Length: 395
Ligand SMILES: C[S@@+](CC[C@H](N)C(=O)[O-])C[C@H]1O[C@@H](n2cnc3c(N)ncnc32)[C@H](O)[C@@H]1O
Image (cartoon, rainbow, N blue to C red; front, side, top):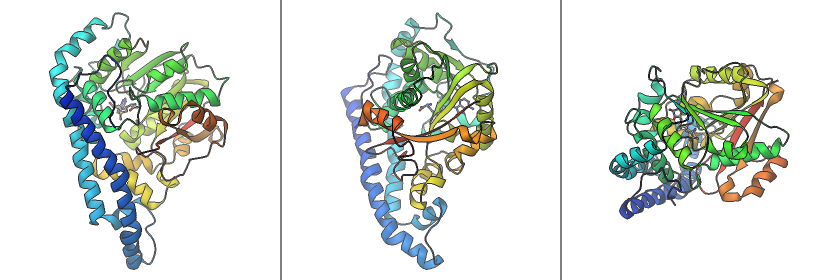
């Protein structure tokens, strides 16, 4: 079920708007759990056998599973409902944001940047992937309302509806789970400077400051509005994080200036060229002994044809043009091509700290760390979510 955000920067919703959000969350839950199960059954019973009959073998890739399922009633119902539900996510929060715009601006102004912790760059050439299409069907994409609070406020409340409560009260479950995992798995590692790339409103940045309070945490994004909102959101929660507008594939930081370069749900929104550049930039700005660490969708190579197709669906129907291209890449190679030694690469699966608790994260960090890697439900936003991550140390 959707959550009501627990921080003071959120756009307040009327009871009707809250109910509307809950309805959309419940509909998404039905689609992502029940209808997804029906589609899987239709694949096994109808689509894959029909493909086998025609080709003399099973579908071997995500693309072939998609080909086999297209036109099947279960696929059509799942896809049509998911597209509509996605549009309803954003529509369900738009009115509250518009009504609250002036109040939010006034609240943000009270905590506005007196300490220089927000730096926008009006001269930045914001890349096309950020503004040219409505990414995941979000009207206006990340630059909605220019550098006003609008894009951030819509995303914040919209993500709460979208995530059905699976991303935590302040949408920080990924950051909390991953930072706790790193802390437990590498107890002697004491980062002093941490960079979040593609931070949006900083919801998965703040947990790194909580995990490592002594560290300076810097969060960058190419879109100005979300940073303005994120900066106020962080301040209102008493979190000292620096927000800067910049491109992750062209960082304005010195060589060897960070101990961690982190991102969450970011790499799949980049072109192949931008992505390669991001890894090179991460390598450059990391100190020797530093760690690059990403939470992302698990790669296609780790999944069967149906499960690969299930995640790649967004590439075709949810305005995520780079999603499949990203999932076809191999994380180890992405790191290696940027200079990280292959032996210094690792991948892992972290149970959601909000759902499974701190002990489960600690167990994952100390136990069989490959557990969950390659498992079909890893990375799926549905009941029992488990987050996929990978990282590499710079020598
Ligand atoms: C899906 S959001 C990720 C949000 C957040 N990290 C999270 O955990 O949910 C992707 C973000 O990447 C940003 N972005 C896309 N391309 C970028 C680039 N080249 N440099 C910096 N930010 C970029 C977008 O503006 C957007 O805020």
